[in-house]
Image (cartoon, rainbow, N blue to C red):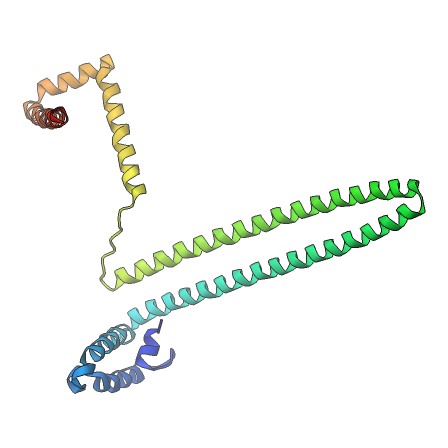
Amino acid sequence: MKTLYEILEVSENASKEIIEKAYKVLAKKYHPDLQPEGEKEKAEQSMKQINEAYDILSDDNKREKYDEQLKLERQKIEEQKNAQSRMQNNNYQDTNYHNMSNRNNAQNNYDTTNNYQKNEYSNNKNENINEQYYKNMQERMRKRQEEIKMQQEQERNVREQYERRYQQAYEDYLRSLGYKIKYKWTWKNYRDLLIIIGVIIVVCIILWFFPPTHKIIMDFYNSNPIIANIINIIGRIIVGIWNGICSFFSKK
């Protein structure tokens, strides 16, 4: 994806005068009225990008915020590359480790065969040594796998932290430009809302059936006619909905 500097075809250190000149040249080049009939739509898209880029880069505050955002994006990409490089190095080390283990195993098998040919006592002794060697090797491999898992977990946590920071910085940047950020509700949000409603209902039921709080609620209800009327209306609505549901399922 092109940066705003690339859209205006200027360097990131360009002065405001150069940016303004570049904008005028590109505006004249891509103005829709100066394009053939088949190129007008494409020129309008290009012109929209050019106007947005100029609007940000010609304003010192907006440009400073954009440069910070651009720096964060590049840092994120660099960190992802470094993480991939570390993972590749770990895989390479694991491969060398396994190859070395295989060579050592082959050499041990060869030595065991020769010792077996010499005498039975030597064979039993080497078998015990070989068994201990395998146990030690398995223990080292297990520890190595645990270290790799820990490294991967740490790298995943680092990536998640930078992604959250990047997302927050990006949203702050959009807000600074006057955009409103809307979050799409997910199943997790609905689930949390249902849990909260369920907890409130359970608490209300407990308070209703607990004698001291029940008395307080009834006194408040009887002493406030407006509240009592509102509660009565809500109660009738709930009863009406419940009767409608029961009637609907009874017909089926």
